[in-house]
Length: 221
Image (cartoon, rainbow, N blue to C red):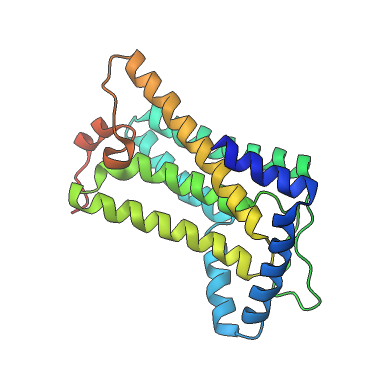
């Protein structure tokens, strides 16, 4: 994942050809959306589900539940992965310092820098981490549906940021790539921790990062 992110970073920082396409696509999408109030309302709702205040609840509620069940390592996994992803996003934003798209008739105003998209990165990290922690509670036949549903929702959050005119395509792609790299790396470290403690290697997308926890709660059937 380092190569795709490196390419996007190079294009953004060197104002490469991709950035010209970025601006053209942003203008085109803005023109299609700006006069459709119902569409804008839906996009703002999707965008809200990727805001920090919503993600804090998305992660915080499972963390409290896990602590009550004495599942401290899973609670720690959720907290570290979520906060770590947010910190990385902030550092990269400040380092790159890319201005956001600008329009004479903006649909929505956002603050901070543009690359990478914090909504895209944080939603992938937080929704993904929560899914991997809670997946053992879902009946096996519904797990692929849960994974696909989360993937579609995270993609919709990223698209909402494009359509609302507050990010470029490369911002959203950069957020997804960086977020995926952080989440995959975090899961890999967790797997090493499990093996060091004599536990078997898991298939996270099929059974979650700590499937043994499923025995302590009924599956969602």
